[in-house]
Length: 136
Ligand code: CDP
Ligand code: MG
Picture 1 (cartoon, rainbow, N blue to C red):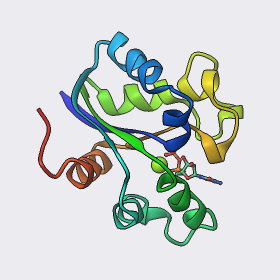
Picture 2 (tube, rainbow, N blue to C red; picture 1 turned 90 degrees about the vertical axis):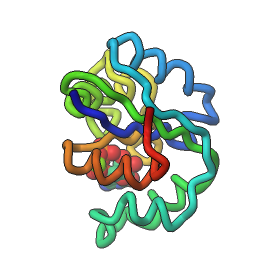
Picture 3 (cartoon, helix red, strand yellow; picture 1 turned 45 degrees about the horizontal axis):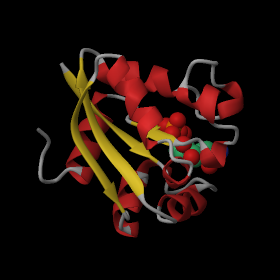
């Protein structure tokens, strides 16, 4: 059993996609074990994306993640990390397969609707960052 982190980015919240994205997660028989709507502190987002600190898009992605409310979700299940990554689709929505969240609901890499942990180590680090109080 694994637990992974999903963030619904500000564009997803503004477009009223909290329910649609959470519905897909639950329909897959993955369990929501943590869920909150927050205005993310800039320091938390910078730490979250620390691996991208030297990338040209770092400032813009941090600006974006702090531009409005986001939803943080802890998701548990067998192979949850890989299952959720596959469900969200490729980083650039134009490369994301139909049937994925990004392939069905997003169009640009700057507004690709969700974050999901890339591997179990990243998931553990990110869950500690976004759910310091722990999950259910
Ligand atoms: O989110 P994912 O793990 O699929 O992609 P990433 O490579 O870890 O990049 C993190 C986020 O930075 C992406 O989801 C995009 O929102 C943003 N990004 C961007 O705006 N432009 C790029 N060329 C690459 C990533
Ligand atoms: Mg990533």
